[in-house]
Amino acid sequence: MTDLPQAASRFTSQNQTTSERLKTNTVGLVALSDFRKRRADILEQQEREAREAALSTRTNNSTPDRSLTATPNNASADNSEPERQKKKKKRARALVSFGDDEEEEDAAGPKIVTGRGAAKKNKEEAVGNDAGSGGEAAAESVSSDDHDKGQKGSTKIAVNSSVGVVPRALTKAALRREAAEREVLRKEFLLLQAAIKATEIAIPFVFYDGTNIPGGVVRVKKGDFVWLFLDKSRKVGAQLGVGADKSANARRDWARVSVDDLMLVRGTMIIPQHYEFYFFIINKTMGTNNKPLFDYSTEATPTQPTAAGPSAAGISRAPGISELEGVSDDPTITKVVDRRWYQRNKHIYPANVWQTFDPEKDYSKDIRRDPGGNAFFFSK
Image 1 (cartoon, rainbow, N blue to C red):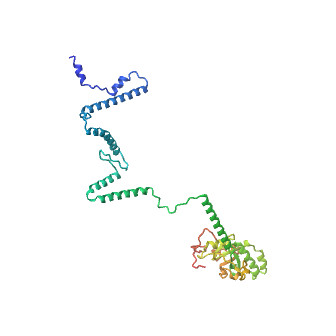
Image 2: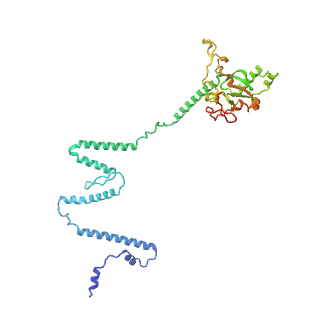
Image 3: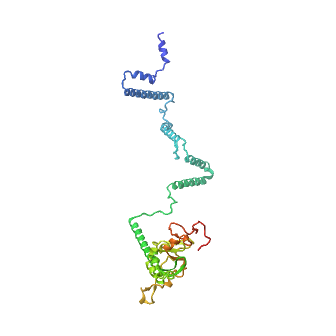
Protein backbone atom coordinates (compact mmCIF):
# COMPACT_ATOMS: atom_id res chain seq x y z
CA MET A 1 0.00 0.00 0.00
CA THR A 2 2.95 2.24 0.51
CA ASP A 3 3.88 1.93 -3.20
CA LEU A 4 0.54 3.33 -4.41
CA PRO A 5 1.59 7.02 -4.41
CA GLN A 6 4.73 6.11 -6.36
CA ALA A 7 2.71 4.21 -8.95
CA ALA A 8 0.30 7.09 -9.33
CA SER A 9 3.16 9.53 -9.80
CA ARG A 10 4.31 7.59 -12.90
CA PHE A 11 1.14 8.64 -14.78
CA THR A 12 1.27 12.31 -13.82
CA SER A 13 3.03 14.95 -15.92
CA GLN A 14 6.52 15.82 -14.78
CA ASN A 15 6.53 19.19 -16.62
CA GLN A 16 4.86 22.08 -14.89
CA THR A 17 2.75 24.50 -16.89
CA THR A 18 3.54 28.19 -17.21
CA SER A 19 0.83 29.20 -14.75
CA GLU A 20 2.09 26.71 -12.17
CA ARG A 21 5.65 27.97 -12.47
CA LEU A 22 4.45 31.53 -12.19
CA LYS A 23 2.59 30.66 -9.01
CA THR A 24 5.66 29.13 -7.42
CA ASN A 25 8.23 31.70 -8.63
CA THR A 26 6.30 34.94 -8.16
CA VAL A 27 5.44 34.61 -4.52
CA GLY A 28 6.24 37.80 -2.66
CA LEU A 29 6.72 40.03 -5.74
CA VAL A 30 5.50 43.60 -5.40
CA ALA A 31 6.48 45.46 -8.60
CA LEU A 32 4.93 44.71 -12.00
CA SER A 33 8.31 44.94 -13.71
CA ASP A 34 9.67 42.09 -11.54
CA PHE A 35 6.67 39.96 -12.47
CA ARG A 36 7.20 40.55 -16.21
CA LYS A 37 10.89 39.74 -15.93
CA ARG A 38 10.19 36.52 -14.02
CA ARG A 39 7.57 35.46 -16.58
CA ALA A 40 9.99 36.08 -19.47
CA ASP A 41 12.61 33.90 -17.77
CA ILE A 42 10.09 31.09 -17.28
CA LEU A 43 9.00 31.20 -20.93
CA GLU A 44 12.60 31.12 -22.09
CA GLN A 45 13.33 28.14 -19.83
CA GLN A 46 10.31 26.23 -21.20
CA GLU A 47 11.42 26.81 -24.78
CA ARG A 48 14.93 25.60 -23.99
CA GLU A 49 13.59 22.43 -22.34
CA ALA A 50 11.31 21.77 -25.33
CA ARG A 51 14.26 22.01 -27.74
CA GLU A 52 16.38 19.67 -25.61
CA ALA A 53 13.55 17.13 -25.45
CA ALA A 54 13.06 17.21 -29.23
CA LEU A 55 16.79 16.78 -29.82
CA SER A 56 17.01 13.81 -27.48
CA THR A 57 14.02 12.14 -29.16
CA ARG A 58 15.56 12.58 -32.63
CA THR A 59 18.86 11.10 -31.38
CA ASN A 60 17.19 8.00 -29.96
CA ASN A 61 15.19 7.33 -33.15
CA SER A 62 18.05 8.00 -35.60
CA THR A 63 20.07 5.37 -37.43
CA PRO A 64 23.37 4.10 -36.05
CA ASP A 65 26.30 6.42 -36.36
CA ARG A 66 28.21 5.75 -39.58
CA SER A 67 31.13 7.99 -38.74
CA LEU A 68 33.03 4.97 -37.41
CA THR A 69 32.97 3.22 -40.79
CA ALA A 70 35.59 4.50 -43.16
CA THR A 71 33.59 4.75 -46.38
CA PRO A 72 33.62 7.51 -48.96
CA ASN A 73 29.85 7.90 -48.63
CA ASN A 74 30.17 8.95 -45.01
CA ALA A 75 32.03 12.11 -45.87
CA SER A 76 29.57 13.00 -48.58
CA ALA A 77 26.66 12.32 -46.23
CA ASP A 78 28.19 14.56 -43.59
CA ASN A 79 28.78 17.31 -46.12
CA SER A 80 25.22 16.99 -47.47
CA GLU A 81 23.68 18.02 -44.12
CA PRO A 82 24.53 21.73 -44.41
CA GLU A 83 23.61 21.59 -48.10
CA ARG A 84 20.15 20.25 -47.23
CA GLN A 85 19.72 23.02 -44.73
CA LYS A 86 20.66 25.60 -47.36
CA LYS A 87 18.24 23.97 -49.79
CA LYS A 88 15.41 24.16 -47.27
CA LYS A 89 16.11 27.83 -46.59
CA LYS A 90 16.10 28.64 -50.31
CA ARG A 91 12.91 26.66 -50.85
CA ALA A 92 11.18 28.46 -48.00
CA ARG A 93 12.34 31.81 -49.35
CA ALA A 94 11.04 30.94 -52.84
CA LEU A 95 7.65 29.91 -51.49
CA VAL A 96 7.04 33.29 -49.90
CA SER A 97 8.49 35.29 -52.79
CA PHE A 98 6.11 37.39 -54.87
CA GLY A 99 8.70 38.86 -57.23
CA ASP A 100 9.45 38.03 -60.85
CA ASP A 101 13.13 37.28 -60.30
CA GLU A 102 14.39 33.76 -60.86
CA GLU A 103 15.79 31.65 -58.04
CA GLU A 104 19.06 29.91 -58.56
CA GLU A 105 18.76 26.13 -58.74
CA ASP A 106 20.64 24.15 -56.13
CA ALA A 107 22.65 21.11 -57.15
CA ALA A 108 21.00 18.90 -54.54
CA GLY A 109 17.33 19.53 -55.49
CA PRO A 110 14.91 21.23 -57.89
CA LYS A 111 14.34 24.98 -57.93
CA ILE A 112 11.08 26.77 -57.23
CA VAL A 113 10.44 29.79 -59.48
CA THR A 114 7.54 32.11 -60.14
CA GLY A 115 6.49 34.55 -62.87
CA ARG A 116 8.85 34.90 -65.81
CA GLY A 117 11.25 32.44 -64.21
CA ALA A 118 8.70 29.61 -64.60
CA ALA A 119 8.19 30.46 -68.24
CA LYS A 120 11.92 30.36 -68.92
CA LYS A 121 12.22 27.05 -67.05
CA ASN A 122 9.58 25.50 -69.31
CA LYS A 123 11.46 26.71 -72.37
CA GLU A 124 14.72 25.23 -71.09
CA GLU A 125 13.02 21.88 -70.41
CA ALA A 126 11.68 21.86 -73.96
CA VAL A 127 15.20 22.52 -75.20
CA GLY A 128 16.48 19.59 -73.13
CA ASN A 129 13.83 17.20 -74.51
CA ASP A 130 14.65 18.10 -78.10
CA ALA A 131 18.41 18.07 -77.60
CA GLY A 132 18.80 14.75 -79.43
CA SER A 133 17.09 15.78 -82.66
CA GLY A 134 17.11 19.56 -82.85
CA GLY A 135 19.79 20.80 -80.51
CA GLU A 136 20.95 23.59 -82.73
CA ALA A 137 17.42 24.88 -83.35
CA ALA A 138 16.67 24.80 -79.64
CA ALA A 139 19.87 26.69 -78.87
CA GLU A 140 18.90 29.32 -81.43
CA SER A 141 15.46 29.67 -79.84
CA VAL A 142 17.03 30.13 -76.41
CA SER A 143 19.44 32.73 -77.75
CA SER A 144 16.57 34.54 -79.47
CA ASP A 145 14.60 34.52 -76.22
CA ASP A 146 17.59 35.92 -74.38
CA HIS A 147 17.96 38.53 -77.12
CA ASP A 148 14.30 39.50 -76.81
CA LYS A 149 14.68 39.65 -73.07
CA GLY A 150 17.71 41.90 -73.50
CA GLN A 151 15.71 44.14 -75.81
CA LYS A 152 12.89 44.33 -73.27
CA GLY A 153 15.38 45.24 -70.60
CA SER A 154 16.93 47.88 -72.82
CA THR A 155 13.57 49.53 -73.47
CA LYS A 156 13.27 50.30 -69.79
CA ILE A 157 16.21 52.68 -70.03
CA ALA A 158 15.68 53.82 -73.62
CA VAL A 159 15.39 57.48 -74.47
CA ASN A 160 11.87 58.90 -74.73
CA SER A 161 11.18 58.88 -78.46
CA SER A 162 8.17 61.16 -78.13
CA VAL A 163 10.44 64.16 -77.53
CA GLY A 164 10.86 65.85 -80.89
CA VAL A 165 13.75 68.23 -80.25
CA VAL A 166 16.25 67.88 -77.46
CA PRO A 167 16.86 71.33 -75.94
CA ARG A 168 20.42 72.45 -75.99
CA ALA A 169 22.25 73.67 -72.94
CA LEU A 170 21.81 77.41 -72.38
CA THR A 171 25.28 78.60 -71.57
CA LYS A 172 26.22 82.22 -71.08
CA ALA A 173 27.74 82.34 -74.55
CA ALA A 174 24.57 80.91 -76.10
CA LEU A 175 22.41 83.42 -74.22
CA ARG A 176 24.59 86.29 -75.39
CA ARG A 177 24.48 85.02 -78.96
CA GLU A 178 20.67 84.73 -78.90
CA ALA A 179 20.35 88.20 -77.39
CA ALA A 180 22.57 89.59 -80.15
CA GLU A 181 20.48 87.87 -82.83
CA ARG A 182 17.27 89.24 -81.33
CA GLU A 183 18.75 92.71 -81.24
CA VAL A 184 19.76 92.49 -84.91
CA LEU A 185 16.27 91.32 -85.89
CA ARG A 186 14.69 94.07 -83.81
CA LYS A 187 16.77 96.73 -85.54
CA GLU A 188 15.93 95.29 -88.96
CA PHE A 189 12.24 95.33 -88.12
CA LEU A 190 12.40 98.92 -86.88
CA LEU A 191 14.17 99.99 -90.08
CA LEU A 192 11.58 98.22 -92.22
CA GLN A 193 8.74 99.70 -90.17
CA ALA A 194 10.18 103.19 -90.49
CA ALA A 195 10.55 102.75 -94.26
CA ILE A 196 6.91 101.62 -94.58
CA LYS A 197 5.65 104.50 -92.46
CA ALA A 198 7.64 106.97 -94.53
CA THR A 199 6.04 105.76 -97.77
CA GLU A 200 3.57 108.30 -99.17
CA ILE A 201 0.08 107.46 -100.40
CA ALA A 202 -2.72 109.44 -102.02
CA ILE A 203 -6.25 109.53 -100.57
CA PRO A 204 -8.99 111.00 -102.79
CA PHE A 205 -11.95 112.28 -100.77
CA VAL A 206 -15.18 114.26 -100.86
CA PHE A 207 -16.84 116.66 -98.46
CA TYR A 208 -20.20 115.35 -97.39
CA ASP A 209 -23.15 117.35 -96.09
CA GLY A 210 -25.94 115.25 -97.52
CA THR A 211 -24.39 115.46 -100.98
CA ASN A 212 -20.93 114.64 -102.27
CA ILE A 213 -18.80 117.76 -102.81
CA PRO A 214 -15.50 117.08 -104.65
CA GLY A 215 -12.56 117.69 -102.38
CA GLY A 216 -9.55 116.51 -104.37
CA VAL A 217 -6.60 114.34 -103.31
CA VAL A 218 -4.59 114.58 -100.10
CA ARG A 219 -1.00 113.36 -99.94
CA VAL A 220 -0.11 111.64 -96.62
CA LYS A 221 2.30 109.05 -95.31
CA LYS A 222 1.35 105.59 -94.11
CA GLY A 223 2.58 106.47 -90.65
CA ASP A 224 0.52 109.69 -90.35
CA PHE A 225 -2.42 110.03 -87.99
CA VAL A 226 -5.97 110.51 -89.15
CA TRP A 227 -6.14 113.98 -87.64
CA LEU A 228 -3.28 115.06 -89.91
CA PHE A 229 -5.31 113.99 -92.95
CA LEU A 230 -8.31 116.00 -91.65
CA ASP A 231 -6.14 119.07 -91.17
CA LYS A 232 -4.90 118.85 -94.76
CA SER A 233 -8.43 118.33 -96.06
CA ARG A 234 -9.56 121.43 -94.10
CA LYS A 235 -6.90 123.47 -95.92
CA VAL A 236 -8.04 122.03 -99.26
CA GLY A 237 -11.64 123.01 -98.48
CA ALA A 238 -10.56 126.56 -97.66
CA GLN A 239 -8.60 126.82 -100.92
CA LEU A 240 -11.46 125.46 -103.02
CA GLY A 241 -14.05 127.54 -101.18
CA VAL A 242 -16.31 124.61 -100.53
CA GLY A 243 -19.76 125.76 -99.45
CA ALA A 244 -19.60 129.13 -101.21
CA ASP A 245 -23.00 128.52 -102.74
CA LYS A 246 -24.52 128.31 -99.26
CA SER A 247 -22.45 130.95 -97.50
CA ALA A 248 -20.84 134.11 -98.81
CA ASN A 249 -17.97 133.81 -96.31
CA ALA A 250 -17.02 130.19 -97.00
CA ARG A 251 -13.30 130.80 -96.60
CA ARG A 252 -13.83 132.50 -93.25
CA ASP A 253 -16.01 129.60 -92.12
CA TRP A 254 -13.28 127.09 -93.02
CA ALA A 255 -10.75 129.16 -91.06
CA ARG A 256 -12.95 128.82 -87.99
CA VAL A 257 -13.26 125.03 -88.37
CA SER A 258 -10.83 122.98 -86.27
CA VAL A 259 -9.70 119.39 -86.69
CA ASP A 260 -11.96 118.28 -83.84
CA ASP A 261 -14.98 119.55 -85.78
CA LEU A 262 -14.29 117.14 -88.67
CA MET A 263 -14.84 113.39 -89.04
CA LEU A 264 -13.34 110.83 -91.42
CA VAL A 265 -15.85 108.27 -92.66
CA ARG A 266 -14.37 105.38 -94.63
CA GLY A 267 -17.24 103.53 -96.24
CA THR A 268 -19.65 103.24 -93.30
CA MET A 269 -16.93 103.30 -90.63
CA ILE A 270 -16.11 106.37 -88.56
CA ILE A 271 -12.33 106.32 -88.07
CA PRO A 272 -11.12 107.89 -84.78
CA GLN A 273 -8.53 110.61 -85.17
CA HIS A 274 -5.86 109.04 -82.94
CA TYR A 275 -5.28 106.03 -85.27
CA GLU A 276 -2.44 105.80 -87.78
CA PHE A 277 -3.05 104.67 -91.32
CA TYR A 278 -0.23 102.17 -90.73
CA PHE A 279 -2.41 100.34 -88.19
CA PHE A 280 -5.10 99.55 -90.76
CA ILE A 281 -2.63 98.82 -93.56
CA ILE A 282 -0.34 96.41 -91.70
CA ASN A 283 -3.25 94.56 -90.02
CA LYS A 284 -5.36 94.32 -93.19
CA THR A 285 -8.37 95.56 -91.22
CA MET A 286 -11.63 94.55 -92.90
CA GLY A 287 -14.68 96.74 -93.14
CA THR A 288 -18.39 95.96 -93.26
CA ASN A 289 -18.29 95.28 -97.01
CA ASN A 290 -15.69 92.52 -96.44
CA LYS A 291 -12.96 94.65 -97.99
CA PRO A 292 -9.92 96.27 -96.39
CA LEU A 293 -10.60 99.68 -94.95
CA PHE A 294 -7.38 101.00 -96.45
CA ASP A 295 -6.27 98.75 -99.29
CA TYR A 296 -2.61 99.73 -99.56
CA SER A 297 0.51 97.58 -99.81
CA THR A 298 2.52 96.67 -96.72
CA GLU A 299 5.85 97.23 -98.47
CA ALA A 300 8.02 100.32 -98.65
CA THR A 301 8.13 102.11 -102.00
CA PRO A 302 11.73 102.94 -103.00
CA THR A 303 12.48 106.52 -103.97
CA GLN A 304 13.42 107.29 -107.56
CA PRO A 305 16.75 108.92 -108.49
CA THR A 306 16.66 112.33 -110.16
CA ALA A 307 19.01 111.43 -113.00
CA ALA A 308 21.21 108.59 -114.17
CA GLY A 309 24.96 108.55 -113.72
CA PRO A 310 27.50 108.45 -110.91
CA SER A 311 27.05 112.15 -110.13
CA ALA A 312 23.42 111.54 -109.16
CA ALA A 313 24.20 108.78 -106.67
CA GLY A 314 22.49 109.29 -103.32
CA ILE A 315 20.15 111.97 -104.69
CA SER A 316 16.47 111.06 -104.95
CA ARG A 317 13.26 112.89 -105.66
CA ALA A 318 9.79 112.50 -104.22
CA PRO A 319 7.29 110.99 -106.66
CA GLY A 320 4.50 113.18 -107.97
CA ILE A 321 1.02 112.86 -106.55
CA SER A 322 -0.12 111.15 -109.74
CA GLU A 323 2.47 108.41 -109.13
CA LEU A 324 1.38 107.61 -105.59
CA GLU A 325 -0.52 104.50 -104.60
CA GLY A 326 -4.26 105.00 -104.24
CA VAL A 327 -4.58 108.06 -106.46
CA SER A 328 -7.09 106.29 -108.69
CA ASP A 329 -9.41 105.11 -105.87
CA ASP A 330 -13.06 106.09 -105.71
CA PRO A 331 -13.21 109.43 -103.81
CA THR A 332 -16.75 108.76 -102.50
CA ILE A 333 -15.42 105.99 -100.26
CA THR A 334 -13.62 108.58 -98.10
CA LYS A 335 -15.86 111.32 -96.72
CA VAL A 336 -14.90 114.35 -94.64
CA VAL A 337 -17.94 115.30 -92.57
CA ASP A 338 -18.65 118.19 -90.26
CA ARG A 339 -19.33 116.75 -86.82
CA ARG A 340 -22.07 119.31 -86.14
CA TRP A 341 -23.90 118.24 -89.29
CA TYR A 342 -23.59 114.60 -88.20
CA GLN A 343 -25.11 115.31 -84.79
CA ARG A 344 -28.13 116.94 -86.46
CA ASN A 345 -28.64 114.22 -89.08
CA LYS A 346 -27.40 110.97 -87.49
CA HIS A 347 -30.95 109.60 -87.50
CA ILE A 348 -31.23 110.01 -91.27
CA TYR A 349 -29.77 107.69 -93.86
CA PRO A 350 -26.85 107.25 -94.56
CA ALA A 351 -25.59 108.74 -91.28
CA ASN A 352 -27.79 106.35 -89.29
CA VAL A 353 -25.77 103.32 -90.50
CA TRP A 354 -22.35 104.78 -89.73
CA GLN A 355 -20.59 103.21 -86.75
CA THR A 356 -17.43 104.06 -84.88
CA PHE A 357 -14.53 101.67 -85.47
CA ASP A 358 -13.91 99.11 -82.70
CA PRO A 359 -10.61 97.17 -82.95
CA GLU A 360 -12.06 94.23 -80.95
CA LYS A 361 -14.95 93.66 -83.36
CA ASP A 362 -14.86 91.58 -86.56
CA TYR A 363 -16.60 93.55 -89.31
CA SER A 364 -15.93 91.07 -92.10
CA LYS A 365 -19.14 89.15 -91.31
CA ASP A 366 -21.14 92.10 -90.03
CA ILE A 367 -24.58 92.62 -91.57
CA ARG A 368 -25.62 96.19 -92.17
CA ARG A 369 -28.91 97.05 -90.50
CA ASP A 370 -31.06 100.12 -90.08
CA PRO A 371 -31.96 101.56 -86.66
CA GLY A 372 -35.03 99.29 -86.63
CA GLY A 373 -32.87 96.17 -86.95
CA ASN A 374 -33.81 95.43 -90.56
CA ALA A 375 -30.98 94.12 -92.76
CA PHE A 376 -30.08 95.97 -95.95
CA PHE A 377 -30.17 94.15 -99.26
CA PHE A 378 -27.37 96.13 -100.87
CA SER A 379 -23.66 96.20 -100.25
CA LYS A 380 -22.74 99.83 -100.76
